[in-house]
Amino acid sequence: MFDPIYETPGKSTYGRVNRRGFLAASGAVVGAALLARSGRASALPTQTIADGASVPILIIGSGYGGAVAALRLALAGQQVAVVEKGMSWSTPGSDGKVFCNMLSPDGRSFWLRTMTDQPINHFLGVPYNKSISRYTGVLDSEQFSGIRIYQGRGVGGGSLVNGGMAVTPKQQYFGSILPSVDAASMYSTYYPRANANLKVNNVDQTWFESADCYQFARTGRRTAQASGFTTTFVPNVYDFNYMKQEQANTAPRSALNAEVIYGNNYGKNSLDKTYLAAAVATGKVTITPQHVVTTVKPSGSGYSVVMNQIDTNGSTVATKTVTAQKVFFAAGSVGTSKLLVTQRATGALPNLPASVGTGWGNNGNVMVARQNQAWDPTGSLQSCIPVMGIDNWADTGGPAFAEISPFPAGLETFASLYLAITKNPNRATFSYNSTSGGVDLNWQQAWNQPSIDAAKRIFDPINAKQWTIYRTDLFGEYKTWGDDFAYHPLGGCVLNVSTDNYGRLPGYPGLYVIDGSLIPGCTTVNPFVTITALAERNIENIVANDFH
Ligand code: FAE
Picture (cartoon, rainbow, N blue to C red):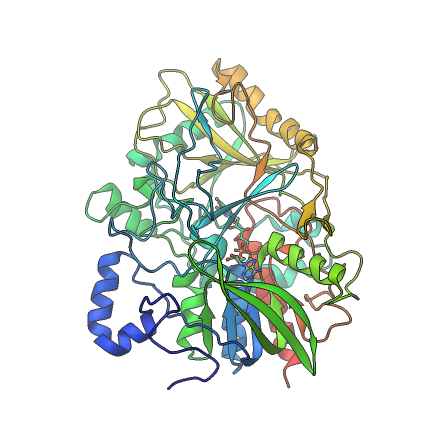
C-alpha cells in the first residue's frame, strides 16, 4: 500500500531501486537469492520520508537506543519513523561486497574523507593512512580539539563497525555506572533481555584453544596470567558458529578477512539483523537513511523536525520539515549532545537544562601495544573479533579492563594490542560555537593521564616479567599510547540529571533521549550492552506511562 508520508515507493531519490520496491517488482524469492549472494541477507527495506509528513513518533538515529525504541514502540502498536544520517548498507560495490576490509580501504570505509584516519595510523613509525574517494562511508572519525571520536554511520549505527564485544558489567560496579537505576531489575530483567535480543553468544572454548585465528588472544592471556592478572572470556554478537566455518574455509571469510571497523560482510549480528529487523517486521516501522536532523522545535501539540537529505558526497539534495507528536533523540552520545546544545543555544528548545552537554567521558579509553618475544607469536591470521579481556578493575589504585585486541596486519608482527577501559574521573562539556555554528567539546588530551597510569599498572608488570617493551611505532612517530581517540563516547545528556530517571527531557513533553548520552562517562566495560539494557528499561516505563 502506498503510504502518503513517503516518497515514491520502489525508487530511492538517487534512482537506485530500494529493497521494498525491488521485492515488489521482482518477487521475494529472486530478491532473497541476490541478497544471499551479496552476503548481507539482512538488508532492511528503507523508505524516504516526504517533506511535510506528519508522523506520531520520530526517532533520530538507528543505533542501539534508536533500535530498541523502534521495536518496543512498534510492539506497543505505535507507528514509528526512524531517520538516520548514514546509508543503508545493503548494496554491494564493484567487488561484490557491501563493506571493504581494513587492508584495502576505499570510500566505503570513512565518512566524507579523502584520506583514511585509522586508529593505528603508523606502522614501523611510517604514516599508514591511505587515499580514498569521498563518500558517506561507515566509520566517522569526528575531530574535536583534544580528541577524535570514532562512530558508526548507517542503518545500525555503531553496531556496523564495532568489535561486537557484548559485556555485561559486574553488578558490584553498577552503582558507579548509573547510580539512579535499580540494579536488581537491570540484572534480572533488562540485561538478559538485551543480551537475548542482541543474539549474544560465546566462543567455543575448546575450539578457541586450537584455532589459528586466536593465537593472539592466547598469547595475550599467557603473558597476562604469568604476571598474576585475571583474564576472562568475553561474549560477542558475532556468530561463532559462522567463524568456525571461516577458520575451516567452508564459508566466505569476514572476521578472518580483516573486516570489522569498516563493517563485516558476514557473521556479525549487527542491529539490522536483530532489533531493527524485528522492528521492521512488525509493519509499523519505517527507516529513512541519508537524512540528517538539524532542528527540533515545538510546533502545535508536537514538534517540527528539520532534516537535510544528503547524497553520497554529503551534499544536501533536499531540506524537509516533518512534524511529530513525540521525538526520540537516539543520535548517540555525540550526535544527541550536539543536537541538544544547538537547539538550546539557537532558541529552538531554549528551556533545556543547563546540564545538557555536560558529563561526557570516553569510557577511559586508551590503546597500547607490546612487542612480544620471538617465541611468542601472535599469528598472521587473526580474527577481528576480540574474545578475551584482562580484568584489573578490582585494583583500587587504577581500575582497568583491557580488551586483548586483534592486530590483523596479514603477517606475523609479534605485537599484542590492547584497548584499555579505565576509571578516568575527567568529564567534558559540549558547547555551541556561535562563530562556527558548530559544537565544541572541551576534552583535553592531557586528561587521559589517569587512563595511561591505570593501563601501566597492567602492562608495566607484564613487560617486566616477559622482558618485553611497548611498541612506539603504531600511534605516531615514537608514540606509545593511543590516547588521542575514543571508541566509547558516553554522556552529554545524563540520566536523572539532564532528563528524568527514564530519559524524558524536562519542560518538553514528548521529547526523549534514549542512547549512550544518558550514561555518565563510563560503563567499566565495553558499553553497548548497557546502552541497550538501559534503553529497554526506559522505553518500558515510557510506553506504560506516556501512551494512553
Ligand atoms: P550509535 O550506535 O552511535 O547510533 C547513533 C546513530 O545516530 C548513528 O547511526 C548516527 O549516524 C545517527 N545520527 C547521528 N546524528 C544524527 C542526526 N543529526 N540525524 C540523523 N541521524 C544521526 O549510538 N562497544 C561495545 O560495547 N563493544 C565493542 O566491541 C565496541 N567496539 C567498538 C569499535 C568501534 C570502532 C567503535 C567506533 C565503537 C565501538 N563500540 C563498542 C562502541 C559502541 O558501538 C557504541 O557505544 C554504540 O554504538 C553507541 O550506541 P548509541 O545508540 O548511543
